[in-house]
Image (cartoon, rainbow, N blue to C red; front, side, top):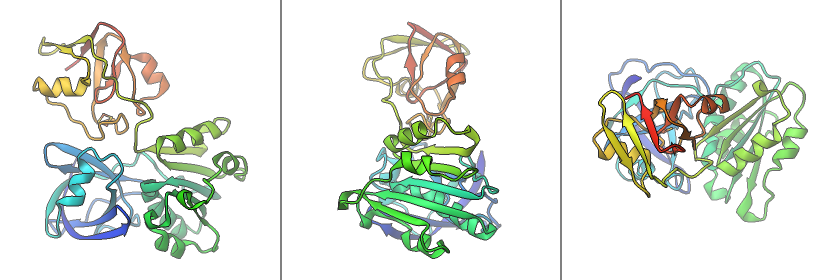
Length: 316
Ligand code: FES
């Protein structure tokens, strides 16, 4: 989805290892509107696409603000973002996309964040304040030096007790996710964004709740990518057949053969690399497709998934 050209106006250190980037429209026209929880995909060099949650308040059309953790992922995108862009540089962006929308009518929204997973909640808390709705945050970080946006969140906290910071490396308890979920008032909506272990604990704690009250966003994979190889992938439209060797992902095999593949997270989270499957059974390793979609075996995330059958035929 083609979006605006962005001009980097400023970088700011938000916490240890976390830098925020404030972009404005390169053309001067208002930026496309976004809703709380939305992200943009930035086009980085070497055809890298990276998704970042918008941190600033929905309704702002004069800027997009994202924050990048140097430690998270570290697969090229975050390292480049930390080392290269300078104010005045231009970057292409997608239109804002929201896969993690805020349910604005909930009487209470409960946010559980781990590390850089705080970013969508800054925007959501600001939106709920505008609407006069209550929210509560449990924010887990290794140390308070690595806690970004605490000042902003405290400023948004009208009740004075909505922000609960858990510095797990400083002898503080981790958030008790099962208790938070168990004690959530009826009708409240629960959100979680953070590392896989936290998301898995959240998903399991919420398994008895109506799914429409439960919202989670992954930014790191819950499973290892399939790299055992030993199968063939046939490209139906070109008639090419490629061997996927041990130690290589399906994505690397396709790229090495010159097949144009759009990809972004490389971890089975964003859905960018989805390809239609005509024959064979994928070894699904992604966190993007639903269980029903995985069982249908009609699509595969080529960045992380492999094949359970000797031959996989893709409609490309
Ligand atoms: S690139 Fe994101 S799911 Fe494959």
